[in-house]
Length: 140
Image (cartoon, rainbow, N blue to C red; front, side):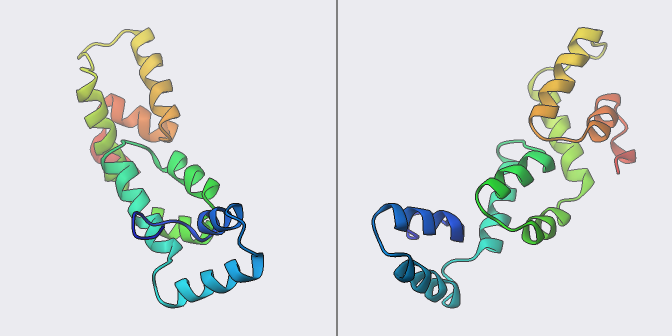
């Protein structure tokens, strides 16, 4: 299974147990794979963050939630997301605004609609507001 893509430890454990392997054998296999470096939650999380930000245009809150749902530990998530700079999020928002042909003078309804769209993608309200105003250099 690891030949096709990376899995988190929990995902692989769930898949193997669903196929009927005993829990002791699954635990032993996971320990062996981890020791050999073939199974690494930190590597999985780093790759997931790269894909989610650069390709899918997601924000840090949504990425954290998705990684947590896949079984990645909070410490690993925090560490991987710490490497994501605030400029990365603002650039992603700017790319989304450009792709959606954000008008120079948006109406209040347009602003609300875009704000909620960006919230659903996982960006913080502060970063969204600053990026929509064009304060890219001031994003924290």
